[in-house]
Image (cartoon, rainbow, N blue to C red; front, side, top):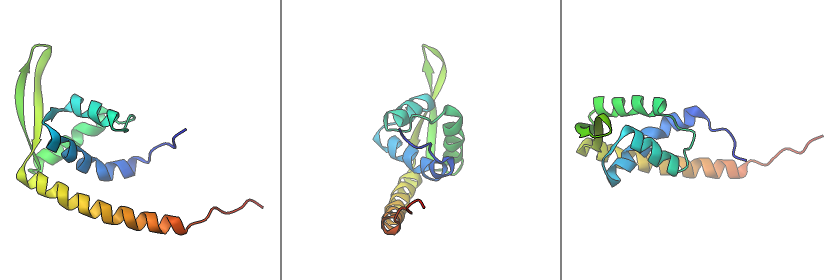
Length: 115
């Protein structure tokens, strides 16, 4: 059984993951949640994603367009801007460096035996 996910860890990497998915193809919010679920973040909610999308758009890292939907209200589709793409690659490099450091340090830890 998987350990519960630390929400602070997810908060730190979610913008990078959203940008990564949007480089594959433009998506609307609910579709992004579904894609993130398929990628293994099955406990992610739309309430967690939409503030990230709003922040990325406010920061100029993604842009959006409204598309009429026959199944309800118009959908807001998102795509990375050149700034967002640059930010994705910079963040991905930093993540890989941090991840390698964390892996090295965790490998040094040994479980303590019970008395």
